[in-house]
Length: 142
Image 1 (cartoon, rainbow, N blue to C red):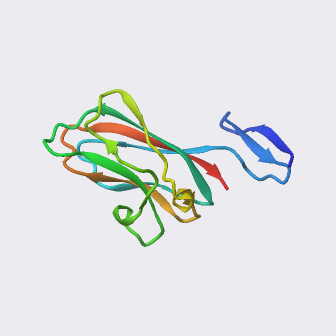
Image 2 (cartoon, rainbow, N blue to C red; image 1 turned 45 degrees about the vertical axis):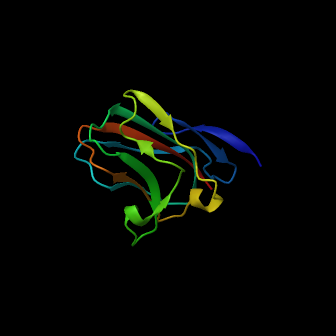
């Protein structure tokens, strides 16, 4: 298959097949604040494969209990809290400030397939108190 490097209108670069098929990586991200609740931050318009998930705590939560989050996918009609986790373990929202947490992707291959119409979101557990940070999901078209 022939693949070309193509500069997009916004200046970014992507890979494109000779038939115009896009092969670049896209990123979905969101931040969380102390007042955040479970939320969707991406709805797929085509099929994707999750390639990586990186979170970064900027201010650690201070609640006495566990404060965590999971990045999940959910089809239309399903709440993100009832979705499928894209990784093992959780994001530690009480982790070291200004430090990246690279999440281990699920070992179940189908968990990483995002279909058109699926949402990606974040599901919080515990009381966030002062917790702030961000998460980025890298997606490859499939």
